[in-house]
Length: 101
Image 1 (tube, rainbow, N blue to C red):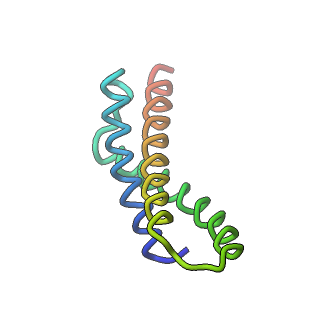
Image 2 (cartoon, rainbow, N blue to C red):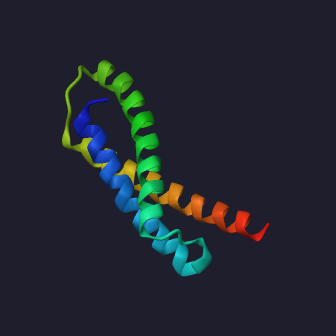
Image 3 (tube, one colour):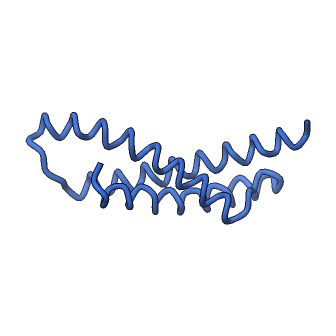
């Protein structure tokens, strides 16, 4: 994993985490973690998706002759954002469920 793709995934994950936390928080306010915790959850989600994406893209890149194109960067941004969104939402739901017990 190169540093540029890692940064793309982490920044996209932060954005996705913040958006995911506010979306889930608009449905049920107790699911919102707050901006800082949503950002941290987004970093984790974006990093995990980025790791999986880069592992899979190395296999695909080797088959296609290598190189980086704009679609790979775009899919990296989308994947990181979606990973952050999902991780932030899941963390908010888990936090709310644990607070009830």
